[in-house]
Image (cartoon, rainbow, N blue to C red; front, top):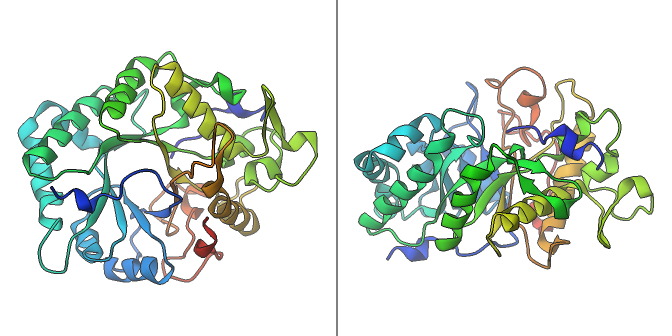
Length: 349
């Protein structure tokens, strides 16, 4: 995950395996940067028992993929960032990647894995050594899937909101000078393939870094019934009652300014820490944010009213291998599978 830019926000043939289109769907990221997590079979059973329909894997873990066979849970499968240079430059490596991590799981004993998207890299644009490799890696992976006879599984990438140079008000959203030369061809490519762009959205960081300028209710999606002017942003007659919508619509505006209309955006990460010493990092706030997101995203955003936002909560577990502080406290569950707080997944519209 990467913080939302403070300046910008401080004031505010096997195609049946793909579940097409952005839906009123809630998934949960399954991060594994820890040494005390349950076995994948237990984790997948948790997803099923709580009616969580989608999972995002940050890297191709074969044990997790095996546990997901035949479950019907939609899977976003990520590549390692460090694999992007080879995926981008070597078509045979992309074919090997697909042969190792996709083809064996689209059929066979135990049923198929329901692949939703392949996610080439996470938050590499802009400013990382891998940024220029994202698009060619996406192209090679798409070609490898096609060569393997696997249709209907879009290839995309996940970006942090640091790709935005302007974000306030949302209608003025635009890619930054550093990101624009990379993002413009990416969004054009995604549009040509009818694939979505994945965006990691974290109102928490805007709130915690704002020095009190961002209202807590606005960040928590708790201000929707409030008439307080500090809880809303008005943009050309459109009222934003929460920061989640404002960030998503700023990303929509940036895509449109890059020359692409109607591109789907999927919120591939969003969350709120329950501890770790950060401003506002409490169990109560985390529970409020996550449950408010689950209840809210089916209604769409002011820029796309009535268009549900497919959203993946971050994350399934507290991960003790992450950096100390709030990074270790984004889990809905403890590694012993007990709840940090309750999320009512059935409340999703």
